[in-house]
Length: 128
Image 1 (cartoon, one colour):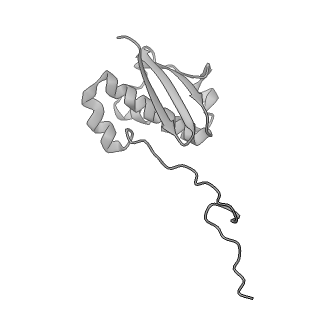
Image 2 (image 1 turned 30 degrees about the vertical axis):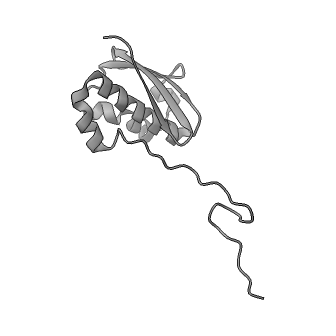
Image 3 (image 1 turned 135 degrees about the vertical axis):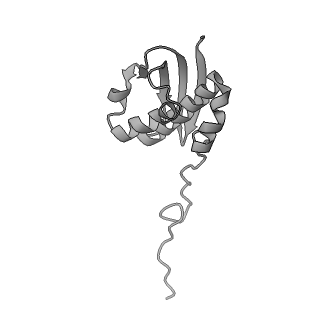
């Protein structure tokens, strides 16, 4: 099997991944998964597509992650892994789609408007 690459985005985070057959190593920006995402919840988010298809430990994944925060990066990586798994085996597409791993979450931070303290919050109105 040759190297498969895919991209995933969430908020301002971008994950570019390269997948090949191996022993299940996930290396993110030259660091191990457990080292890059110390939180077990974020590790769980990243591994969700692999656990769903029971292919944990079957592929080596090399990741370039930049932008965004921890949560956005983890969800961008989840999308990229799901897309790569579909490229490897197209029959898995329905399973991943039903679980919601192939849908790009398009929500972004709304910009702050002038004359307001935040994006939607207004200053207190005074009649007199």
